[in-house]
Length: 93
Length: 107
Image (cartoon, each protein chain N blue to C red):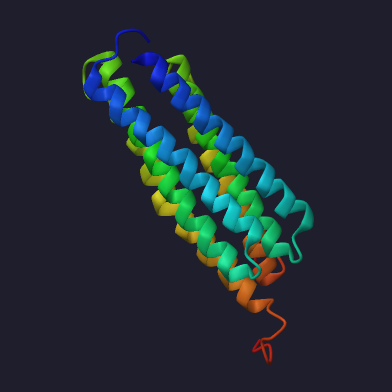
């Protein structure tokens, strides 16, 4: 039964890789800057998903800390970029 | 990772496959929709659902391996559920502000 779950994890990883490729195309092609920030948001969440599925596959809990860190810094980056697009500067005096 | 019980393996498999399909649908919407608001709609919904399913599968598998309930995946799920709407709202406001069809800037 474990083999079935490993194949399911491989399928999920394939889907996540395709999602990363699509987000990269949108990042390179996006007509406006907010589309590019949206693609960046998608890319970091997909990175979290890839790392979590790798943690399930290898059966260790080490990957979980990396996922938490990526979530924190990805949110900070996306929020700072959105604030810059909104107001013209990140930290206002 | 040997001899996982059946009650953990079947839901984890289904959740992993569902997460892959949901995330792929979200990224396809991000690529194929033609307006910024539609892209935002597809991406935020599908990302939250994909993260939720993968974290639930991870909770099931690690609980079955350790033989006690493991809930530390709830931290990242709670964080993403709290924080992803904030960045979505900021980005949507930026998109509305920078929309060329917006008549007059009011500040």
